[in-house]
Image (cartoon, rainbow, N blue to C red; front, side, top):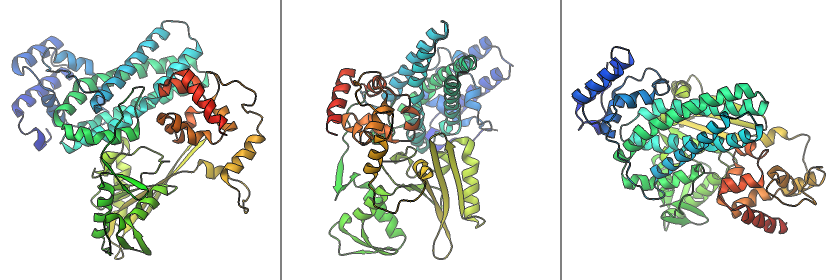
Length: 509
């Protein structure tokens, strides 16, 4: 039984879509040979545009969450051979789809290097260097899931969120598995895992190039793509350069907002819940009667931004309404998430948990649910709390998330005032592994530099903004193995320039 089409696809010939699906289904079930399927597709369907392909995908039953992974894109390409009208228009440097394409090209080149290594006797160092280059590709998945899928959902194309997201996560898990096997020294199992990962990666790339990117260019407007750029930069990119981006900005005291949207959204939210404001010159100066006290919007924004935890709020209609944009954010967020159905903000395999939490909170069975992620050198604590008004009515869900790695390591008591920098300095002085007397070279370990100069972790972004990622949870994996040479490659800075900048910065300490 076919799903009902979304209004965005109403102008497309439905009979043509059904013919496409019928032929594809007969081929998939073995009723047609490849040549028979090609002939019927050519005679009964003809040329197919990206939006027609997307609309047909939207009609497919989605009972199998692994459908995107289980369906061989190369087989589908063979069926539509010569029929898919798939122009690849030139895009301006920095366009969101241009960024995805260039990242894909980078990954293809890395996989080509992997093919070369597979043809040679196993040597650890080249494989470790290759896998360390591949692992940050996860940022490509994060941008798709938080930005591109969200934009497509608003256009009625929900298939990427329900099927491709599952495939993204499957390949991410394959990447983790291969890397773990390599680090554990299980080289035969690693090579097998790598081959599987590389095959699936190329298959996913084929689906992106054939379906996702052309469809996105058809459905998403230039204005919407422009709005995506800020969120894309918040999440980051994989091994590509991007042009400087300076969106229209306005300031509210010491807090910078994009186009004033955060202030206006917050004002509307507070007004909705009955808070009044008086004696204000503008939104930023307006005094608000909050639950306990009086605050301006500027002060509220500053408090949210400096919270030592990440907070997200989903309203009673299950729409994401708010998140705190803290510098230490545990997992990436972008403005594209605002107004999105919360079930579409989670991997399909965990949607049932989200729905169960909301349902039990809504009917009053439960009011709190907690989870934690416990890995070596990383402990993330997550708690969901039912939000209810004074009359006990369900008004949504608040998610709180915190990196508690440091907290779990605390021992004894600290009852005297001791500044963190002083504490770190004392611990470094007693450490046997310092950088004293060593020349700063391409092979210098980042972890050694950070032990000797703790302030470096905060100051590295002044050398290159890409080093800001070293303050995110992923740094727990990167820092132990990173060298100055790897930092040069990841930041696209010439090695000599990076070493010179590091020496000058360290000299200030």
